Image (tube, rainbow, N blue to C red; front, side, top):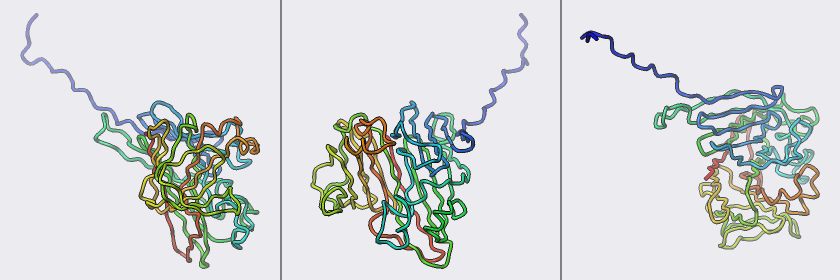
Length: 323
């Protein structure tokens, strides 16, 4: 074979586009799903802007959702991450929200999907999207006539759900769109999935004041001991962590840290588990022994009220890292 000195060299491979986060809308335009190139995923119902699934890169579910949960918009979802606004629980002594149902209307109203945004990481192999942010909006035009009559204040909410590699962030912007001042409470009612509640302990709440909603008189105040919190009975407490919102609250299982929660402008943490009798009393809680596989650790602003004058805004959020 003749060796040609000017034979063409092999063509260099043309790099393809970096992998991107995939966002889809399904279930008759009622559910938004996002998947990162590395496999992490979330699903959010437009009803309540409720996160109903958060899976890691291996497809392991991080949230607990009742098998009997209603996801058709007929009632609030039992599980995932419902959004509580403008009242936590019920407030019969607070005139402005006294006519609202438990936990307000945000979790039972249809939100608008405002779109997505992504961030890229050049440090990871192949680049690609490092996170994806989904924005949802709620305003008076989205409310039922009943909710509008019960709470006629002018408002605007933007709820952002950001899926990252190993973490999930949720943040809420609340704006007073009117001239008259009003007050609100809010909470991110996160149901974490665990393997065995008997092996769970919660750190970051030591030596903290809390309201126990299951004692008499209701609620009673106390200060938690210096030991970690374990769950062995029905629990419904509102903690004001001694370390403030910047100090992480962690969920451990079998001595290993499973989740870490860092809060921004959300001063309280609610810890809830219905236990056996409570689970049996809830029609949409299934299986009835599911309380053994869940724990609610909920970041919120629920002690007292946040007041917004006309035109003012407030923002708060949390970052959950799965370990």
